[in-house]
Length: 102
Image (tube, rainbow, N blue to C red; front, side, top):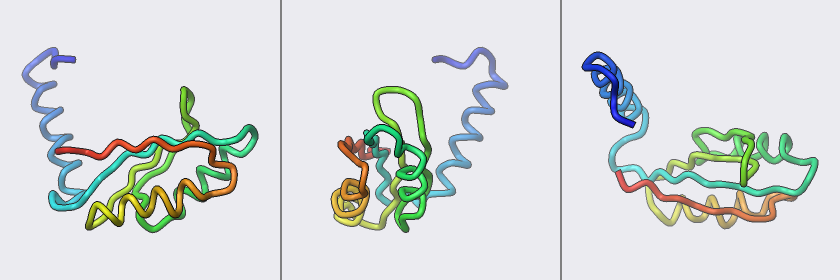
């Protein structure tokens, strides 16, 4: 959606710049959608948030139950976090990973 005004455009630019300073440009960032078994959304979300490479994790409503932001130095580290840690958590039935390109 396009900004409604010049000040909104400036606010969006400032917000984007702040987000970029949190994660170094040379870092790998991926968003992982996690589908979990019934009744364990909260516990899986808590365990996902506790993982070292997870910057943020949230229980969400929609097609997936948990969304996690994974940040790593290298691509293989991000993928290991997904395959060896998130996907292997008890109660996890499916993951889908989106690697950021910018």
